[in-house]
Image 1 (cartoon, rainbow, N blue to C red):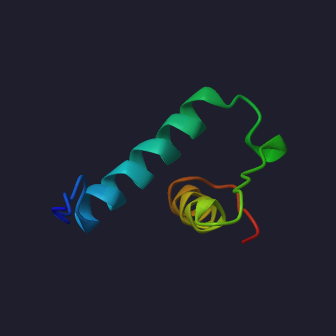
Image 2 (tube, rainbow, N blue to C red; image 1 turned 180 degrees about the horizontal axis):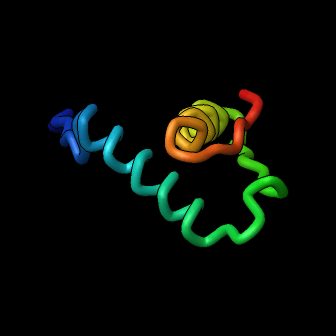
Length: 65
């Protein structure tokens, strides 16, 4: 059996995806102060923390991480 690995997105691609997701969340949220970012354990929590961190960078609202 062939064990080839295909890289779908590289590290800079992941960063761009996180930034785009963060911007889309901000664009679609009318009340940012009422926004909650959740991630399911097994990598979802890690992604949620990265999205929250990115939102902290681009908005005036501070999310707890």
